[in-house]
Length: 427
Image 1 (cartoon, one colour):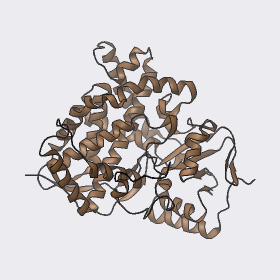
Image 2 (image 1 turned 90 degrees about the vertical axis):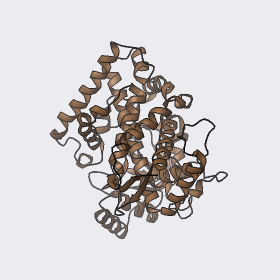
Image 3 (image 1 turned 30 degrees about the horizontal axis):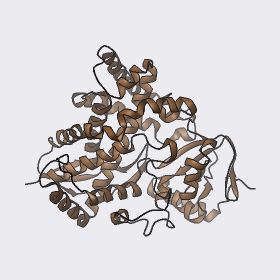
Image 4 (image 1 turned 120 degrees about the horizontal axis):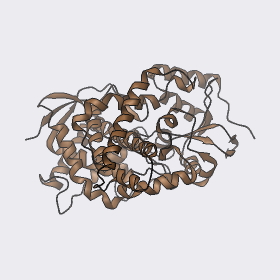
């Protein structure tokens, strides 16, 4: 049995040319996937992980043989999050997850509706008619307000100037970069900002220990007897993972709507008819069918968590190839979501593929992972996107003014250089 399929020189040349042309590995991965198959190895001297894609292999990694892979890696994500729930395994992970699930349970979502709408309104109140805004930046503001208020009962509006750069530095710290090839490369530019972010979180913990009157995620962690360091690890995990994914989802959805004005117009009409001018939380319910389809299709084309990074603990077989223990294994959500065998016109924005009654092959759609370690905040994030998008589309018009947008593989898959839109209040 061989370790991986060989990559011929022409395929390697095309992949390299694509990466240089697009400034991103995404094009290279698509070429390797289409020409080599759903299992291949990156052919670089200092970086040679195995990559898998497609529903069959996604299920293998996420469910069928999940015990053969570990989440904890020797990389900057683990350095930053330390013992956070995202980078622990076994009983330690299970304990943290059990502690953190109650505040994020779907049954709690009704209690977050008003703060989600208020956060969207607060940010949008700064916009002026005809102004051009970057919806990547504006979405991040909204997502930060929501995650900090909902999970830690902290209003960060006045603190945004203080924590903005440290948060962006933390995201850059864990994004792909030169450290992939030189693990211990000096990175002094990050130390000051990461320390400032830590100090901010420890300050929140200190204040809460003196006043335990809240019922939120932070209080759950304190009541469980965790020390300040462990609480910091879970808070930072939820802060980074919880807001950055929502930021990317909102920004990509605005981009896709701007690039498809016919669908944009249909969606606004649906919201107007369904809500009748009332906020999305109005009693009596609303039926955002097209909105849900748009969100799901946005997640398919541009999944914020675009790749899963694992260490193989026990040798794994993939058809006629294998991955030895100790190797790095990526399962590509991005490639799986664009697999032509699973999706008709896989590269096209087509929300109706998620219309009611239409089903997708199992594990062909995995924006939140799958199995026992699927995203703990999936329901929260989807509700947040639905409410924020509905509220902003209900109250503002949006016109895309820059179509030159590309996908950037950072901590999440985000639109670069941003999503510039002209906004105006609706009459």
